[in-house]
Image 1: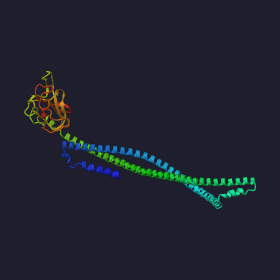
Image 2: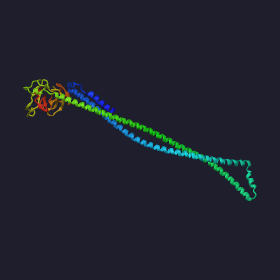
Image 3: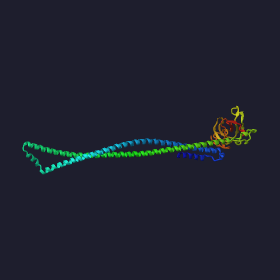
Image 4: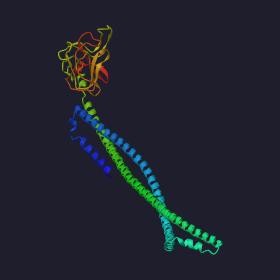
Length: 405
């Protein structure tokens, strides 16, 4: 919704800026219209540049959307993998805790055996302490026969061996308990550490997931804004083009209105009458040295049509525009030498030939006024002396200039 409101606002603003006031179009000049057209062209150029910038911004934002989307997909895969890893570690912790419970039971059993052996050994020690070491000798001396003596000796040895075994088992059980406790504590600490690491890794991945989601949202918004800008500038370009077309049409009407009264002049009796025509004399005080029409060419000696009039004047004399218009030629032009041609509208041209080198004072496309200096008299091209060759052309064809001066 905001996008279309922006577009409508842009069009409305453009319309307010460029809508001509009622009743003022008739007072505009071609120069004013050209100035407005130039402003429109500059505004259109700026709008096009903004449109291109928006397109580049959209392309860049889309690149980052794609990049972050791909990275987000990788993160989701990693998060899934870590979740599976956490499940496995949790299972390992559960198994380790079960092992700890079993070992605790075994530990209790081992402690019971140790306590039993300790009690037995304590009894043996107390007996030995009470009766003394001679009790073994008394047993042997109280034998009734040699066989009885051997049997008693064997029994004493068995008792001693059993005492030794009890001591070894007692020692082994104590060492085993210590080893089992240490191993289980190490295993439990290890799986707990793995679980903590996996949890931390998962938290980091989830934080990155949130970050990438935010970046994708940000660049998606930039894409939307770029599209809005592009559409706004497109609407503005359409409005500028419409206004430009209207101004061009208005300019053409003004040029068409510059129809000269040469038709009225052509109905007269003819002959040079100074400023009696619709156009001003381009060179003040010049001598008319050659008329329009068939003549013997002064250089080739061949009889041919002279397409203009020659106005003899000293080298460097100012040449003025016979009427206002637009310069369409300002350069060397075949046998005319340095030449200026002015378009006055309604397919009426004036030509100024044989201008001296460096004497052209206007440029192609320049708007000139009636009587404005445009060049200086010379003798370039096919010329026998300093003079201005002046022509009037209708629809590109030369006509007698005399009725227009």
